[in-house]
Picture 1 (tube, rainbow, N blue to C red):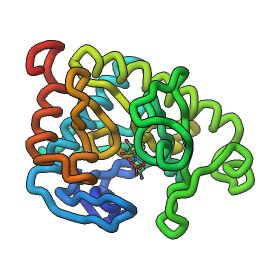
Picture 2: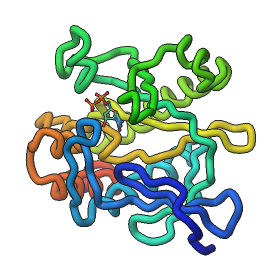
Picture 3: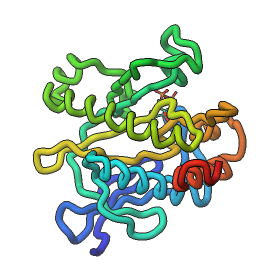
Length: 240
Ligand code: CDP
């Protein structure tokens, strides 16, 4: 399979067409951004850790009956994926209040959200990702009611799977973001599932093990990403 032309370049990943129809190559770059792109840096090796963790979670989800765009790994930092017709929604599942939900609503940081809260934002740089509701999603023709029901049910199923997996490794899954796309009449999970798209707290210390370390200068980002990737890829109890 040969890489052909650049299809899309985002804040931290680039997607290329290949000579095989319907198969794309996704490269996790070392770029990291926060606050709607206002803070930006390049951290050597970051892309590899995010690709490694995303690959692991995509495979793990597939083993647990969730369909994703992942096909195979090509080299560190680069994976082959199914070409999806992306749905411009950022589907966030929250188990614990943190980040924007604390800024915008009267929740206390660290307050458990049981049942989990799904928040869906419009993925649009020009509009700065405003929050949507079901009626807006239908009015904007972003998804049908059937698709939205399926997206929400899949997001909650993924939350159960990831939460249990991470809990066994001493990590609280505070919240995470998913993106979905259409593929031959099905809805698949796309994008990435990594330290850039999840909020993870150490169960014992409460320390951030994710992009919040970068957002709020909480420590060495690469050391954090390397450490959490190791914990995620290890059997429970081995590298905690
Ligand atoms: O993190 P921030 O305060 O910007 O927004 P949030 O709504 O609290 O984010 C909830 C979760 O979704 C966090 O784990 C973010 O890292 C993730 N997220 C993301 O990956 N990409 C976005 N564009 C927005 C949120």
